[in-house]
Amino acid sequence: MVEVGRIKISNLKSQIQNQDRLVVQDLQKSFLSPAGERLEVLRGLSFSAGAGAMLAIMGASGAGKSTLLHVIGGLEVADEGRVQLSEFEVTRARGRELAEYRNATIGFVFQFHHLLPDLTAAENVALPLLISRAPRRESHEQAIEALASMKLSERRDHPITHLSGGEQQRVALARALVKRPRLVLADEPTGNLDAETGDEIAVLLKSYCQRERAIVIIATHNARLADLCDRTLILEDGRIIEGQN
Image 1 (tube, rainbow, N blue to C red):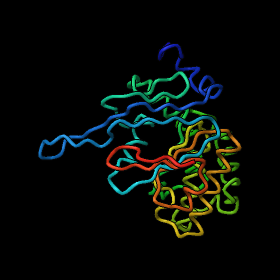
Image 2: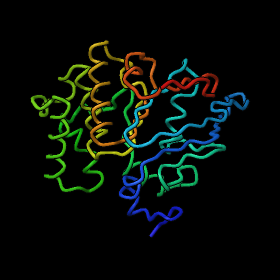
Image 3: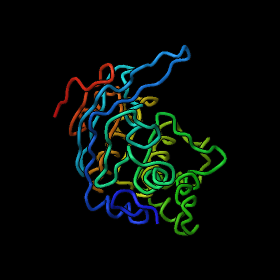
Image 4: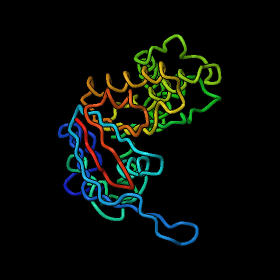
């Protein structure tokens, strides 16, 4: 049995769920440019969030918002610092440990929905469950329930290409939330939507955060979305320069 600190991988989700708290401390991340120059993207970030909190991360393009979400989500490896969700230290984990962390704990929402066009809405939402080897019938039922929560019951059997942009993003949100993740990382989830549809996505994220007592972190340029959050962190040149309640 693989262990990370004191947590067995098989028990990761249940233990995190009982002690939800995200801590980011002195986080640093850099990349090499094509010319071989070291580019510092994150320069020592620190913040924390507890269960039921929804945070907005705002800042200009290139400030490090997406990189921050990728490191928290285990998609990028930090150079220095610590990311810890409950007792699971993300920045010390590798390989299978990170895969299990992402699979059991996190829901990713992106600006571009990355849905499979050859599948229906319900089939797209069920996909994460099927990949986790959940029974097909159970996966389909949970997908239908998730789509109902997005007010898409009547569209569940429609191919993705028959849905509007806003409907597609709600399908993507249902897919991200179908496994009831404890941590939701959303990168510009309203970036390609009109204001009204963007507001709908914002309300759905807020509702999930409150209902499930999940932690939701959103990188956004949308001030209306940020206003719905409990806190807003402003990123500039890889540093948090302001935090608003």
